[in-house]
Image: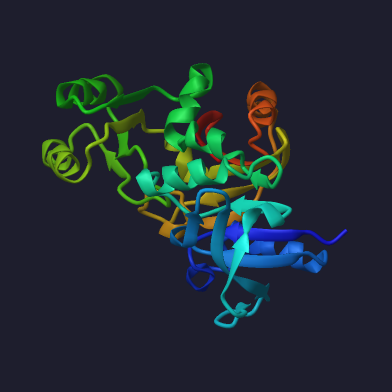
Length: 283
């Protein structure tokens, strides 16, 4: 059966085909004979009766620098699609949230992956707080004194923006680092939201494992090993992806959260596990 699949994403020309999961999803869908459309979040509209997008037919190929072809721009009614893939990167801001409200108007008659209401309810660094027994010690706050006390307790900590992605704005702050106050001042200037602080997990030097779950079941994993002298294990920050198997602890984490993910319509999910701790749930 041929499906019509619309992909809401950042521009296909900006993706790295060696690291981008949306590109791989599109490539596989195309190889299965499905019809692809590409549109940017800002081209999504609601006219009172229909949710529409200014979209282009999309072809993809695994050729660096020539990995896509876009057809003629056309207006499509998303209710005519079989699937919409909600795939743009954060920041998880009001623009992002607004697209989830609009896509609710067509879901589930048109299957939106993932359920837009649940995506809105599950920012990656907050949703993981549903499972405190699986997390490393974590603090979410704007209170400078609380963060200072958290470092005093846990010594090495990680500080990062609550709604960032790709390793941007992630800092490893050691016990003797004199820049904590200046760093918190910078965060206060650029972000209105709380920060997230976590106990530093030394096991990150052996890698940050990304596990993919489909309908709540683990489908596979890669381990992302940071570069020498780098605390971030994001591929955007130069980490090396390595084939990985699931450990007993990994499977335990997946069993703990899997049924909840499935019940929420979170069909395609990537979780991050460092040293047996669940650190993020990416929906």
